Image 1 (spheres, one colour):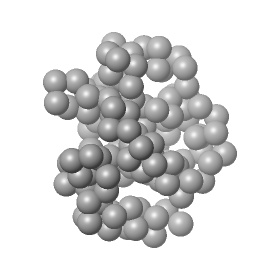
Image 2 (cartoon, rainbow, N blue to C red):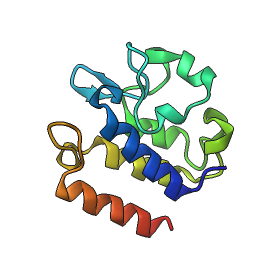
Image 3 (cartoon, rainbow, N blue to C red):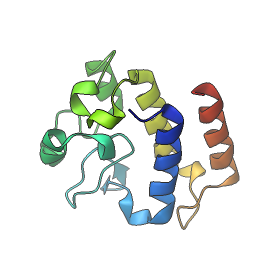
Image 4 (cartoon, rainbow, N blue to C red):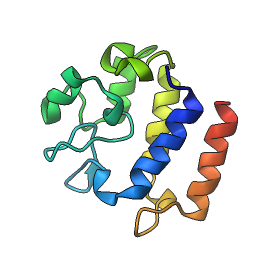
Length: 124
């Protein structure tokens, strides 16, 4: 199982390497996009949930998604990502969704760097 710190670092690297890794639909982030890309949580889904694509329940609504899965989303994740509470995944997704954390080339802004430090402190 990956630690929370490993997942945070992996997420930052994944989205700063290539801005096209973000799952966007109509200017909004989604768990599964038409082009096969995924958001911060969606990229950790097991194949069954990735295969649901844009038809996945609550694909466009992170608040409803979090409420639906209050407690655990382990059944949706690849095994190496399981074992972490829903609040961690929600915090990771909220970090990923904040435009002020990402520069024009999807590098981290100063605020983004501070947010990463905050996440690492909270989940270390």
